[in-house]
Image (cartoon, rainbow, N blue to C red):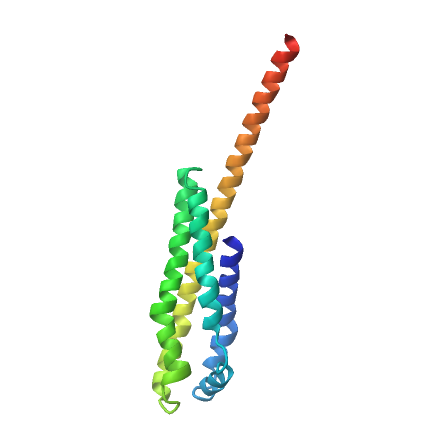
Length: 170
């Protein structure tokens, strides 16, 4: 889950730093260029594939480590909520604005295009922050899992040493 979520995070960050800046650079000409570029395929194809995969992996991790500890369970749950929230934002907020910018709005409606691009651009940073929070909580979960495994290994080692010393004395 961490790998896929990180990939989504950096793809989203790239979109903010490169794509969105290009789209807003010379409205309506920049929007017209983006429309031409997205005629065959658009970034939604990537996100529609990998966002559900990420959510599924987050859910699988939560199920697998449900009994490990309450702290791990809470962190994995928060990460999953972040991933689902980012996806909900994508469908409810971004896809409609994508339609306005890249399909529906007349290129002569410059005010609408500028307003829509500005809203999209600003909220994408919020979505990026939500994805970042999800990745951080996933990493914190993994760290806690490793700590628990380390404690179990030490406990098992101590028990085996104690047992071997008792056997040696007998």
